[in-house]
Amino acid sequence: MKPLNIIKVGGAVVEDEASLSDLLRSFAQLPGNKVLVHGGGRAATQVAAEMGIESVMVQGRRVTDANMLRVVTMVYGGLVNKNIVARLQALGVNALGLTGADLGYMLSDRRPVVDVDYGFVGDVKRTDASILAQLIESSVVPVLAPLTHDGKGSLLNTNADTIAAEAAKALAQMFDVTLTFCFEKQGVLLDADDDSSVIARLYRDDFQRLVAEGTISGGMIPKITNAFCAIDSGVKRVVITHARHLEGGTTIVG
Amino acid sequence: MKPLNIIKVGGAVVEDEASLSDLLRSFAQLPGNKVLVHGGGRAATQVAAEMGIESVMVQGRRVTDANMLRVVTMVYGGLVNKNIVARLQALGVNALGLTGADLGYMLSDRRPVVDVDYGFVGDVKRTDASILAQLIESSVVPVLAPLTHDGKGSLLNTNADTIAAEAAKALAQMFDVTLTFCFEKQGVLLDADDDSSVIARLYRDDFQRLVAEGTISGGMIPKITNAFCAIDSGVKRVVITHARHLEGGTTIVG
Image 1 (cartoon, chains in turn yellow, blue):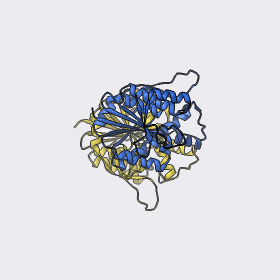
Image 2 (cartoon, chains in turn purple, yellow):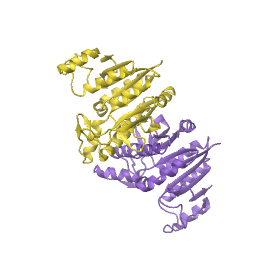
Image 3 (cartoon, one colour):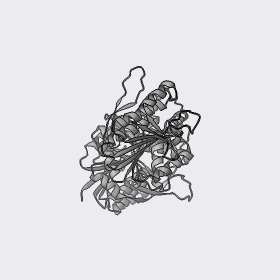
Image 4 (spheres, one colour):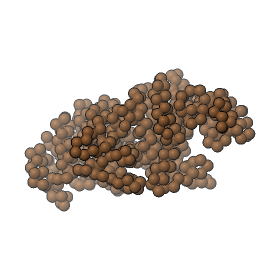
Protein backbone atom coordinates (compact mmCIF):
# COMPACT_ATOMS: atom_id res chain seq x y z
CA MET A 1 0.00 0.00 0.00
CA LYS A 2 1.12 3.56 -0.73
CA PRO A 3 2.10 5.72 2.21
CA LEU A 4 -0.23 8.53 3.30
CA ASN A 5 0.52 11.24 5.83
CA ILE A 6 -2.38 12.69 7.76
CA ILE A 7 -1.29 15.75 9.70
CA LYS A 8 -3.52 17.27 12.34
CA VAL A 9 -2.74 20.76 13.52
CA GLY A 10 -4.42 22.30 16.55
CA GLY A 11 -5.98 25.63 17.26
CA ALA A 12 -2.98 27.14 19.04
CA VAL A 13 -0.74 26.55 16.00
CA VAL A 14 -3.37 27.82 13.57
CA GLU A 15 -3.82 31.02 15.58
CA ASP A 16 -0.16 31.98 15.69
CA GLU A 17 1.07 33.42 12.40
CA ALA A 18 4.69 32.31 12.78
CA SER A 19 3.88 28.73 13.73
CA LEU A 20 1.18 28.39 11.08
CA SER A 21 3.61 29.66 8.50
CA ASP A 22 6.26 27.12 9.62
CA LEU A 23 3.72 24.32 9.64
CA LEU A 24 2.39 25.07 6.17
CA ARG A 25 5.90 25.24 4.75
CA SER A 26 6.84 21.89 6.35
CA PHE A 27 3.58 20.39 5.17
CA ALA A 28 4.12 21.65 1.61
CA GLN A 29 7.55 20.02 1.55
CA LEU A 30 6.25 16.65 2.73
CA PRO A 31 6.54 14.32 -0.27
CA GLY A 32 3.77 11.99 -1.43
CA ASN A 33 0.12 11.70 -0.47
CA LYS A 34 -1.08 13.87 2.37
CA VAL A 35 -4.09 15.27 4.18
CA LEU A 36 -4.23 18.23 6.57
CA VAL A 37 -6.77 18.40 9.40
CA HIS A 38 -7.09 21.63 11.35
CA GLY A 39 -8.71 22.86 14.52
CA GLY A 40 -9.57 26.46 15.23
CA GLY A 41 -11.02 26.57 18.72
CA ARG A 42 -9.11 29.67 19.77
CA ALA A 43 -10.15 31.59 16.66
CA ALA A 44 -13.76 30.54 17.30
CA THR A 45 -13.56 31.79 20.88
CA GLN A 46 -12.13 35.08 19.64
CA VAL A 47 -14.73 35.63 16.90
CA ALA A 48 -17.52 34.62 19.29
CA ALA A 49 -16.22 37.19 21.79
CA GLU A 50 -16.16 39.87 19.07
CA MET A 51 -19.82 39.01 18.43
CA GLY A 52 -20.64 39.19 22.13
CA ILE A 53 -21.15 35.43 22.39
CA GLU A 54 -19.64 33.63 25.35
CA SER A 55 -17.82 30.33 24.77
CA VAL A 56 -18.94 27.63 27.18
CA MET A 57 -16.63 24.64 27.58
CA VAL A 58 -17.49 21.45 29.47
CA GLN A 59 -14.70 18.91 30.00
CA GLY A 60 -12.62 20.69 27.37
CA ARG A 61 -15.40 20.48 24.77
CA ARG A 62 -17.26 23.45 23.31
CA VAL A 63 -20.99 23.63 23.98
CA THR A 64 -22.45 24.46 20.58
CA ASP A 65 -25.87 26.10 20.63
CA ALA A 66 -27.36 27.55 17.42
CA ASN A 67 -25.39 30.80 17.78
CA MET A 68 -22.13 28.96 18.39
CA LEU A 69 -22.79 26.62 15.45
CA ARG A 70 -23.03 29.73 13.31
CA VAL A 71 -19.67 30.92 14.68
CA VAL A 72 -17.83 27.61 14.20
CA THR A 73 -19.29 27.23 10.69
CA MET A 74 -17.84 30.64 9.86
CA VAL A 75 -14.51 30.14 11.58
CA TYR A 76 -13.72 26.48 10.87
CA GLY A 77 -15.39 26.16 7.46
CA GLY A 78 -14.52 29.65 6.25
CA LEU A 79 -11.85 31.69 8.01
CA VAL A 80 -9.36 28.99 9.02
CA ASN A 81 -10.02 26.46 6.26
CA LYS A 82 -10.01 28.83 3.29
CA ASN A 83 -6.98 30.78 4.46
CA ILE A 84 -5.03 27.54 4.83
CA VAL A 85 -6.19 26.42 1.37
CA ALA A 86 -5.17 29.74 -0.24
CA ARG A 87 -1.76 29.63 1.45
CA LEU A 88 -1.14 26.01 0.47
CA GLN A 89 -2.06 26.82 -3.13
CA ALA A 90 0.56 29.58 -3.03
CA LEU A 91 3.05 26.93 -1.85
CA GLY A 92 2.22 24.72 -4.83
CA VAL A 93 -0.05 22.31 -2.94
CA ASN A 94 -3.31 21.51 -4.73
CA ALA A 95 -5.44 21.95 -1.61
CA LEU A 96 -9.20 21.44 -1.38
CA GLY A 97 -11.02 22.49 1.79
CA LEU A 98 -13.74 20.14 3.00
CA THR A 99 -16.27 19.88 5.78
CA GLY A 100 -17.98 16.53 6.30
CA ALA A 101 -20.92 17.86 4.28
CA ASP A 102 -18.78 18.44 1.18
CA LEU A 103 -19.20 15.40 -1.06
CA GLY A 104 -20.93 13.97 2.03
CA TYR A 105 -17.64 12.43 3.08
CA MET A 106 -18.25 12.33 6.85
CA LEU A 107 -21.63 11.79 8.44
CA SER A 108 -22.33 12.10 12.13
CA ASP A 109 -25.11 11.82 14.68
CA ARG A 110 -25.92 14.64 16.98
CA ARG A 111 -24.51 13.66 20.36
CA PRO A 112 -27.28 12.43 22.68
CA VAL A 113 -27.80 14.37 25.89
CA VAL A 114 -26.57 12.35 28.87
CA ASP A 115 -25.23 14.62 31.61
CA VAL A 116 -24.42 17.53 29.33
CA ASP A 117 -26.25 18.92 26.30
CA TYR A 118 -23.39 19.78 23.97
CA GLY A 119 -25.87 21.08 21.38
CA PHE A 120 -24.91 20.82 17.71
CA VAL A 121 -21.99 18.45 18.25
CA GLY A 122 -21.57 15.40 16.07
CA ASP A 123 -20.23 11.93 16.83
CA VAL A 124 -18.89 10.42 13.62
CA LYS A 125 -21.08 7.65 12.21
CA ARG A 126 -19.58 6.98 8.79
CA THR A 127 -16.56 8.16 6.81
CA ASP A 128 -16.58 7.57 3.07
CA ALA A 129 -12.94 6.69 2.54
CA SER A 130 -13.39 6.16 -1.20
CA ILE A 131 -14.27 9.84 -1.69
CA LEU A 132 -11.09 10.96 0.07
CA ALA A 133 -9.03 8.22 -1.64
CA GLN A 134 -10.20 9.33 -5.09
CA LEU A 135 -9.13 12.90 -4.37
CA ILE A 136 -5.79 11.77 -2.99
CA GLU A 137 -5.18 9.53 -6.01
CA SER A 138 -5.78 12.60 -8.22
CA SER A 139 -3.03 14.46 -6.34
CA VAL A 140 -5.52 16.62 -4.49
CA VAL A 141 -4.62 17.46 -0.89
CA PRO A 142 -7.77 17.50 1.27
CA VAL A 143 -7.82 20.11 4.05
CA LEU A 144 -10.38 18.93 6.58
CA ALA A 145 -12.28 21.36 8.83
CA PRO A 146 -13.71 20.09 12.14
CA LEU A 147 -17.32 20.11 10.93
CA THR A 148 -19.48 17.16 9.92
CA HIS A 149 -23.13 16.94 8.86
CA ASP A 150 -26.11 14.89 9.97
CA GLY A 151 -27.43 14.08 6.50
CA LYS A 152 -30.59 16.02 7.34
CA GLY A 153 -29.27 19.44 6.40
CA SER A 154 -27.47 20.45 9.56
CA LEU A 155 -23.77 20.90 10.13
CA LEU A 156 -22.35 19.60 13.40
CA ASN A 157 -19.28 20.67 15.33
CA THR A 158 -16.84 17.76 15.59
CA ASN A 159 -13.51 17.65 17.39
CA ALA A 160 -10.57 17.94 14.97
CA ASP A 161 -8.62 15.10 16.65
CA THR A 162 -11.65 12.90 16.06
CA ILE A 163 -11.91 13.96 12.39
CA ALA A 164 -8.21 13.13 11.94
CA ALA A 165 -8.51 9.76 13.67
CA GLU A 166 -11.69 8.79 11.78
CA ALA A 167 -10.22 9.80 8.43
CA ALA A 168 -7.03 7.87 9.28
CA LYS A 169 -8.94 4.74 10.26
CA ALA A 170 -11.09 4.82 7.12
CA LEU A 171 -8.10 5.46 4.83
CA ALA A 172 -6.02 2.73 6.53
CA GLN A 173 -7.89 0.23 4.34
CA MET A 174 -6.29 1.75 1.25
CA PHE A 175 -3.07 3.41 2.40
CA ASP A 176 -0.19 2.83 4.77
CA VAL A 177 -1.24 5.69 7.07
CA THR A 178 0.92 7.74 9.42
CA LEU A 179 -1.25 10.01 11.56
CA THR A 180 0.63 12.94 13.08
CA PHE A 181 -0.85 15.19 15.72
CA CYS A 182 1.17 18.33 15.90
CA PHE A 183 0.90 21.02 18.49
CA GLU A 184 3.02 23.46 20.49
CA LYS A 185 5.01 20.83 22.49
CA GLN A 186 7.83 18.59 21.31
CA GLY A 187 5.79 15.43 21.96
CA VAL A 188 4.44 13.60 25.00
CA LEU A 189 6.60 14.86 27.87
CA LEU A 190 7.58 13.10 31.09
CA ASP A 191 7.90 16.56 32.61
CA ALA A 192 5.52 19.15 31.18
CA ASP A 193 8.05 21.92 31.85
CA ASP A 194 10.99 20.18 30.21
CA ASP A 195 10.90 20.08 26.40
CA SER A 196 13.77 17.60 26.36
CA SER A 197 11.78 14.98 28.28
CA VAL A 198 10.00 13.67 25.17
CA ILE A 199 8.94 10.02 25.33
CA ALA A 200 10.19 8.66 21.99
CA ARG A 201 8.02 5.55 21.96
CA LEU A 202 4.91 5.25 24.08
CA TYR A 203 3.47 1.78 24.74
CA ARG A 204 -0.06 1.18 25.92
CA ASP A 205 1.01 -0.20 29.32
CA ASP A 206 3.25 2.79 29.97
CA PHE A 207 0.48 5.16 28.93
CA GLN A 208 -1.92 3.65 31.46
CA ARG A 209 0.72 3.82 34.18
CA LEU A 210 1.65 7.44 33.35
CA VAL A 211 -2.00 8.49 33.46
CA ALA A 212 -2.47 6.71 36.82
CA GLU A 213 0.61 8.50 38.15
CA GLY A 214 -0.64 11.86 36.87
CA THR A 215 2.36 12.37 34.55
CA ILE A 216 0.05 12.44 31.53
CA SER A 217 -3.07 14.50 32.14
CA GLY A 218 -5.64 16.89 30.69
CA GLY A 219 -6.03 17.18 26.94
CA MET A 220 -3.22 14.68 26.29
CA ILE A 221 -5.35 11.79 27.58
CA PRO A 222 -8.08 11.88 24.90
CA LYS A 223 -5.43 12.63 22.26
CA ILE A 224 -3.43 9.51 23.14
CA THR A 225 -6.55 7.40 23.67
CA ASN A 226 -7.62 8.39 20.14
CA ALA A 227 -4.17 7.43 18.92
CA PHE A 228 -4.33 3.91 20.38
CA CYS A 229 -7.81 3.52 18.97
CA ALA A 230 -6.50 4.49 15.52
CA ILE A 231 -3.69 1.93 15.83
CA ASP A 232 -6.24 -0.72 16.76
CA SER A 233 -8.15 0.16 13.59
CA GLY A 234 -5.22 -0.38 11.26
CA VAL A 235 -3.44 2.98 11.23
CA LYS A 236 0.24 2.10 10.87
CA ARG A 237 1.81 4.77 13.02
CA VAL A 238 0.62 7.65 15.20
CA VAL A 239 3.06 10.44 16.03
CA ILE A 240 2.62 13.34 18.44
CA THR A 241 5.07 16.13 17.76
CA HIS A 242 5.77 19.84 17.43
CA ALA A 243 4.19 21.78 14.57
CA ARG A 244 7.52 23.21 13.46
CA HIS A 245 9.21 20.14 12.04
CA LEU A 246 6.68 17.33 11.58
CA GLU A 247 9.30 14.83 12.68
CA GLY A 248 10.69 13.49 15.93
CA GLY A 249 8.22 13.60 18.79
CA THR A 250 6.48 10.64 20.38
CA THR A 251 5.49 7.57 18.37
CA ILE A 252 2.51 5.72 19.78
CA VAL A 253 3.10 1.99 19.69
CA GLY A 254 0.22 -0.47 19.70
CA MET B 1 -22.31 19.09 -26.04
CA LYS B 2 -24.12 18.13 -22.85
CA PRO B 3 -26.34 20.73 -21.23
CA LEU B 4 -25.17 22.41 -18.02
CA ASN B 5 -27.24 24.68 -15.80
CA ILE B 6 -25.38 27.32 -13.81
CA ILE B 7 -27.70 28.93 -11.29
CA LYS B 8 -26.68 32.10 -9.48
CA VAL B 9 -28.63 33.06 -6.40
CA GLY B 10 -28.22 36.43 -4.72
CA GLY B 11 -27.84 37.55 -1.17
CA ALA B 12 -31.47 38.49 -0.60
CA VAL B 13 -32.62 34.98 -1.51
CA VAL B 14 -29.90 33.33 0.56
CA GLU B 15 -30.84 35.42 3.60
CA ASP B 16 -34.53 34.57 3.61
CA GLU B 17 -35.22 31.08 4.94
CA ALA B 18 -38.40 30.48 2.93
CA SER B 19 -36.96 31.60 -0.38
CA LEU B 20 -33.67 29.73 0.17
CA SER B 21 -35.63 26.61 0.98
CA ASP B 22 -37.70 26.96 -2.23
CA LEU B 23 -34.61 27.64 -4.28
CA LEU B 24 -32.69 24.65 -2.97
CA ARG B 25 -35.65 22.36 -3.58
CA SER B 26 -36.05 23.63 -7.16
CA PHE B 27 -32.32 23.32 -7.70
CA ALA B 28 -32.25 19.75 -6.35
CA GLN B 29 -35.01 18.77 -8.78
CA LEU B 30 -33.22 20.24 -11.78
CA PRO B 31 -32.11 17.23 -13.87
CA GLY B 32 -28.62 16.82 -15.30
CA ASN B 33 -25.39 18.70 -14.76
CA LYS B 34 -25.55 21.80 -12.59
CA VAL B 35 -23.56 24.34 -10.62
CA LEU B 36 -24.82 26.70 -7.92
CA VAL B 37 -23.21 30.11 -7.34
CA HIS B 38 -24.27 32.12 -4.31
CA GLY B 39 -23.87 35.62 -2.94
CA GLY B 40 -24.19 36.55 0.69
CA GLY B 41 -23.76 40.31 0.89
CA ARG B 42 -26.61 40.84 3.32
CA ALA B 43 -25.38 38.12 5.66
CA ALA B 44 -21.89 39.68 5.51
CA THR B 45 -23.30 43.10 6.39
CA GLN B 46 -25.20 41.55 9.29
CA VAL B 47 -22.23 39.61 10.70
CA ALA B 48 -19.97 42.65 10.24
CA ALA B 49 -22.49 44.73 12.20
CA GLU B 50 -22.55 42.11 14.98
CA MET B 51 -18.76 42.44 15.13
CA GLY B 52 -18.97 46.23 15.21
CA ILE B 53 -17.60 46.57 11.69
CA GLU B 54 -19.27 49.02 9.34
CA SER B 55 -19.94 47.95 5.75
CA VAL B 56 -18.79 50.55 3.24
CA MET B 57 -20.24 50.30 -0.26
CA VAL B 58 -19.07 52.31 -3.26
CA GLN B 59 -21.14 52.07 -6.45
CA GLY B 60 -22.87 49.01 -5.06
CA ARG B 61 -19.58 47.22 -4.37
CA ARG B 62 -18.28 46.33 -0.93
CA VAL B 63 -15.02 47.95 0.15
CA THR B 64 -13.02 45.07 1.57
CA ASP B 65 -10.29 46.03 4.01
CA ALA B 66 -8.48 43.34 6.04
CA ASN B 67 -11.26 43.20 8.65
CA MET B 68 -13.96 42.92 6.02
CA LEU B 69 -11.99 40.23 4.16
CA ARG B 70 -12.05 38.25 7.39
CA VAL B 71 -15.84 38.72 7.57
CA VAL B 72 -16.56 37.73 3.96
CA THR B 73 -14.22 34.73 4.22
CA MET B 74 -16.26 33.58 7.22
CA VAL B 75 -19.66 34.36 5.77
CA TYR B 76 -19.24 33.44 2.09
CA GLY B 77 -16.75 30.58 2.47
CA GLY B 78 -18.19 29.22 5.71
CA LEU B 79 -21.65 30.23 6.86
CA VAL B 80 -23.49 30.53 3.56
CA ASN B 81 -21.52 28.01 1.50
CA LYS B 82 -21.41 25.18 4.02
CA ASN B 83 -25.04 25.51 5.03
CA ILE B 84 -26.09 25.33 1.39
CA VAL B 85 -23.85 22.29 0.89
CA ALA B 86 -25.27 20.49 3.95
CA ARG B 87 -28.84 21.23 2.85
CA LEU B 88 -28.22 20.09 -0.72
CA GLN B 89 -26.67 16.85 0.57
CA ALA B 90 -29.86 16.29 2.56
CA LEU B 91 -31.79 16.75 -0.70
CA GLY B 92 -29.69 14.08 -2.40
CA VAL B 93 -27.40 16.48 -4.29
CA ASN B 94 -23.70 15.60 -4.12
CA ALA B 95 -22.62 19.18 -3.39
CA LEU B 96 -19.05 20.39 -2.95
CA GLY B 97 -18.41 23.92 -1.72
CA LEU B 98 -15.58 25.80 -3.40
CA THR B 99 -13.84 29.13 -3.24
CA GLY B 100 -11.51 30.05 -6.07
CA ALA B 101 -8.61 28.88 -3.89
CA ASP B 102 -9.98 25.34 -3.63
CA LEU B 103 -8.22 23.26 -6.29
CA GLY B 104 -7.01 26.67 -7.46
CA TYR B 105 -9.93 26.81 -9.87
CA MET B 106 -10.29 30.61 -10.09
CA LEU B 107 -7.40 33.04 -9.90
CA SER B 108 -7.74 36.79 -9.71
CA ASP B 109 -5.73 39.98 -9.49
CA ARG B 110 -6.31 42.45 -6.73
CA ARG B 111 -8.19 45.34 -8.29
CA PRO B 112 -5.87 48.26 -8.96
CA VAL B 113 -6.69 51.51 -7.21
CA VAL B 114 -8.06 54.06 -9.68
CA ASP B 115 -10.61 56.35 -8.04
CA VAL B 116 -11.55 53.98 -5.28
CA ASP B 117 -9.46 51.53 -3.23
CA TYR B 118 -11.76 48.54 -2.97
CA GLY B 119 -9.17 46.71 -0.89
CA PHE B 120 -9.04 42.92 -1.10
CA VAL B 121 -11.28 42.66 -4.14
CA GLY B 122 -10.32 40.41 -7.03
CA ASP B 123 -10.84 40.76 -10.77
CA VAL B 124 -10.88 37.31 -12.31
CA LYS B 125 -7.77 36.48 -14.31
CA ARG B 126 -8.13 32.78 -15.08
CA THR B 127 -10.75 30.10 -14.55
CA ASP B 128 -9.63 26.48 -14.82
CA ALA B 129 -12.67 25.01 -16.52
CA SER B 130 -11.16 21.52 -16.64
CA ILE B 131 -11.20 21.30 -12.81
CA LEU B 132 -14.90 22.18 -12.70
CA ALA B 133 -15.66 19.96 -15.72
CA GLN B 134 -13.99 16.95 -14.09
CA LEU B 135 -16.10 17.39 -10.97
CA ILE B 136 -19.28 17.85 -13.01
CA GLU B 137 -18.48 14.75 -15.09
CA SER B 138 -18.17 12.81 -11.80
CA SER B 139 -21.72 13.91 -10.86
CA VAL B 140 -20.42 16.36 -8.28
CA VAL B 141 -22.37 19.61 -7.98
CA PRO B 142 -20.00 22.52 -7.32
CA VAL B 143 -21.34 25.24 -5.01
CA LEU B 144 -19.29 28.35 -5.69
CA ALA B 145 -18.71 31.03 -3.06
CA PRO B 146 -17.89 34.60 -4.16
CA LEU B 147 -14.23 34.38 -3.16
CA THR B 148 -11.18 33.95 -5.38
CA HIS B 149 -7.47 33.90 -4.59
CA ASP B 150 -4.43 35.72 -5.90
CA GLY B 151 -2.11 32.70 -6.07
CA LYS B 152 0.09 34.37 -3.49
CA GLY B 153 -1.79 33.15 -0.43
CA SER B 154 -4.52 35.73 -0.16
CA LEU B 155 -8.23 35.31 -0.69
CA LEU B 156 -10.03 38.08 -2.57
CA ASN B 157 -13.66 39.16 -2.46
CA THR B 158 -15.23 38.73 -5.90
CA ASN B 159 -18.75 39.59 -6.98
CA ALA B 160 -20.95 36.48 -7.26
CA ASP B 161 -22.45 37.56 -10.61
CA THR B 162 -18.90 37.77 -11.94
CA ILE B 163 -18.02 34.32 -10.55
CA ALA B 164 -21.11 32.89 -12.24
CA ALA B 165 -20.39 34.62 -15.56
CA GLU B 166 -16.70 33.63 -15.54
CA ALA B 167 -17.49 30.00 -14.68
CA ALA B 168 -20.16 29.96 -17.41
CA LYS B 169 -17.81 31.40 -20.01
CA ALA B 170 -15.05 28.91 -19.16
CA LEU B 171 -17.42 25.94 -19.12
CA ALA B 172 -19.07 27.00 -22.39
CA GLN B 173 -16.11 25.37 -24.17
CA MET B 174 -17.24 21.98 -22.87
CA PHE B 175 -20.96 22.27 -22.19
CA ASP B 176 -24.08 23.79 -23.64
CA VAL B 177 -24.42 26.31 -20.80
CA THR B 178 -27.57 28.01 -19.55
CA LEU B 179 -26.70 30.66 -16.97
CA THR B 180 -29.60 31.66 -14.74
CA PHE B 181 -29.46 34.63 -12.40
CA CYS B 182 -32.24 34.29 -9.89
CA PHE B 183 -33.33 36.87 -7.41
CA GLU B 184 -36.44 38.24 -5.75
CA LYS B 185 -38.12 39.63 -8.91
CA GLN B 186 -39.86 37.72 -11.71
CA GLY B 187 -37.30 38.88 -14.29
CA VAL B 188 -36.32 42.14 -15.94
CA LEU B 189 -39.38 44.34 -15.49
CA LEU B 190 -40.65 47.18 -17.67
CA ASP B 191 -42.23 48.58 -14.53
CA ALA B 192 -40.35 47.84 -11.31
CA ASP B 193 -43.59 47.85 -9.34
CA ASP B 194 -45.46 45.49 -11.64
CA ASP B 195 -44.40 41.85 -11.44
CA SER B 196 -46.41 41.03 -14.54
CA SER B 197 -44.36 43.41 -16.72
CA VAL B 198 -41.57 40.85 -17.30
CA ILE B 199 -39.64 41.26 -20.55
CA ALA B 200 -39.64 37.70 -21.92
CA ARG B 201 -36.77 38.21 -24.38
CA LEU B 202 -34.31 41.07 -24.04
CA TYR B 203 -32.24 42.07 -27.07
CA ARG B 204 -29.09 44.13 -26.86
CA ASP B 205 -30.59 47.13 -28.71
CA ASP B 206 -33.62 47.18 -26.44
CA PHE B 207 -31.39 46.92 -23.36
CA GLN B 208 -29.40 49.98 -24.41
CA ARG B 209 -32.58 51.91 -25.10
CA LEU B 210 -34.20 50.90 -21.79
CA VAL B 211 -31.10 51.96 -19.87
CA ALA B 212 -31.03 55.30 -21.71
CA GLU B 213 -34.71 55.80 -20.87
CA GLY B 214 -34.09 54.90 -17.21
CA THR B 215 -36.44 51.90 -17.30
CA ILE B 216 -33.55 49.59 -16.42
CA SER B 217 -31.33 51.01 -13.69
CA GLY B 218 -29.18 50.29 -10.62
CA GLY B 219 -27.96 46.77 -9.98
CA MET B 220 -29.76 45.40 -13.05
CA ILE B 221 -27.35 47.18 -15.39
CA PRO B 222 -24.15 45.31 -14.43
CA LYS B 223 -26.16 42.06 -14.18
CA ILE B 224 -27.44 42.39 -17.76
CA THR B 225 -24.11 43.69 -19.05
CA ASN B 226 -22.47 40.58 -17.57
CA ALA B 227 -25.14 38.49 -19.27
CA PHE B 228 -24.42 39.92 -22.72
CA CYS B 229 -20.73 39.48 -22.11
CA ALA B 230 -21.34 35.81 -21.26
CA ILE B 231 -23.36 35.36 -24.46
CA ASP B 232 -20.52 36.91 -26.45
CA SER B 233 -18.17 34.35 -24.87
CA GLY B 234 -20.17 31.33 -25.95
CA VAL B 235 -22.71 30.86 -23.18
CA LYS B 236 -25.82 29.54 -24.93
CA ARG B 237 -28.51 31.23 -22.90
CA VAL B 238 -28.73 33.66 -19.99
CA VAL B 239 -31.94 33.84 -17.98
CA ILE B 240 -32.90 36.31 -15.25
CA THR B 241 -35.74 35.03 -13.12
CA HIS B 242 -37.28 34.57 -9.70
CA ALA B 243 -35.60 32.23 -7.23
CA ARG B 244 -38.77 30.28 -6.58
CA HIS B 245 -39.21 28.46 -9.87
CA LEU B 246 -35.99 28.66 -11.91
CA GLU B 247 -38.06 29.01 -15.07
CA GLY B 248 -39.84 31.75 -16.95
CA GLY B 249 -38.30 35.17 -16.43
CA THR B 250 -36.28 37.12 -18.96
CA THR B 251 -34.06 35.44 -21.52
CA ILE B 252 -31.15 37.56 -22.67
CA VAL B 253 -30.68 37.31 -26.40
CA GLY B 254 -27.34 38.06 -28.01
